[in-house]
Length: 279
Image (tube, rainbow, N blue to C red; front, side, top):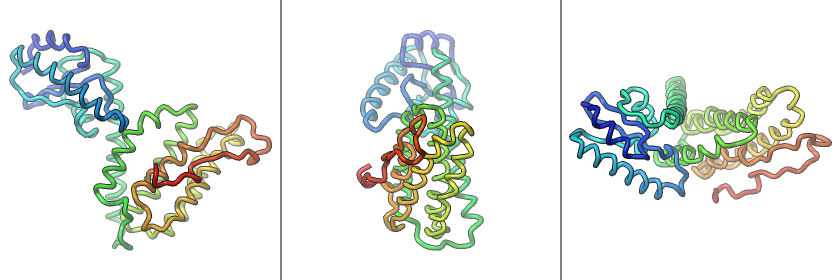
C-alpha cells in the first residue's frame, strides 16, 4: 500500500517522473529517460536508468516499502503503455514529461496492435499459404525489424516540414500493410505484391494540399520509383536489411525545391544507389 511518506523520498530522486501502483502492490518507476533509445544509446541508457532505479528503490526501501519494483523504461512498449494507462499514479514529479512518455508508449503499442490484427485478419481470410515466407518473416528477424523501427522513432518524428513527416509515415504504414504483412504471411504471391506499388503514389498525392502538388509530385515519383526497383529483388532476398531499405526510401528522398523548373528536370538522389545490405 502506498503511503504519504513515500512521496517525500521520491522528491529526492530527480530522474523519477512518476510512480504507478499495481493492484498486487508492486510499483512501477517511470524515469525521465526515453522509451525508444537509438541503438548507440542502449548501453548508456541502461547504466543511467539502473542508477536512477537503484537510488529510488533504495530510498523507498528505507522508508518502509516492501513490495516489488519494475522500471517502465525496461518493459516492452505495450506493457509500458498498459502500466501508464491502467495503474493508478501515486506520485508525479513532472506532468509534462509523464504525458510525453505515455503518448509515445500508446502510439507504438497501437501500431503493434494494428499490425497484429491485420496479419490475423489475413490469416483467417486466406484458405491456404502460397509458399514459404521470405527471410525477414522469421520471429527473430521480425523482432529485430520492430526494435530497429522503434529505435528510429526520433528520426521519424523529427522530420521537417510537417508535410514530409506525414508523407513518410503514411508510406511506412502503406509498406507495412501492402508489402511486409502480405509477404510475411506467405499467402500473397510476390508478383501480386509488386503490382500494388503504384497505388502508393495515389495515396500520397491525396495527402498533399492542391497548391503544393506540383512541387511534391516530384518527391512522390522518386519514392514510388525507388520502391518499384527495390521490389524487383527476388523474394528469397527479402531479408531484414531489405525491409529496412524499404522503410528508409521515403525518409532518404530529399525535400523538393520550392519551384522546380521545369518539373522532373532536377536530378534528386535517394537510396536507389545504396547497397541495402549495409543499412
